[in-house]
Structures are given as C-alpha cells and as structure tokens.
Image 1 (tube, one colour):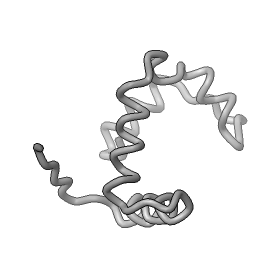
Image 2 (tube, one colour):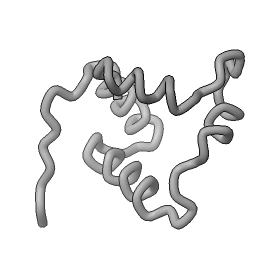
Image 3 (cartoon, one colour):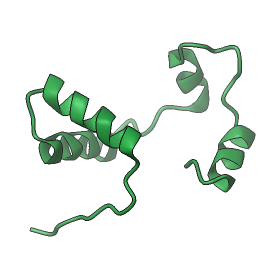
Length: 77
C-alpha cells in the first residue's frame, strides 16, 4: 500500500487533527484517512462558497474568491 509523508505540517493543524482523532477514538493516521476519504469520495464535492459562508461563525465578512486568492498568495492555503 502506498504511503504519504506531509512535510512542514502546521502545529495548529496537527493539534486539531489530534483532538479530532481522540474524539473519534482513532489514531492520527486513521482520522486523516477518514477525513480524506470523506472529502475525496463525496459525490457532492466540496461546498460552494455561499455554503461555506452560511457555516461560518462570523458571516460578517463574506468569503470571496478574491480573499481565497490573497490567502493563497500569502502562503495560507
């Protein structure tokens, strides 16, 4: 079975993944695989930007493609 190594994994994401794994009674590897399977095998695909805005806690600043592009350019993808 192929392996995957993620370099420069942000500590904040690692902490969030670890907390989620503990909450779901899974190892880090199993939790990451479950999340990837859910994201990649979902026939509906990723939510639209307006759906992401509806899910946000503070929708006062709408998520636009321009904001996403600026975040990616700043290295926060």
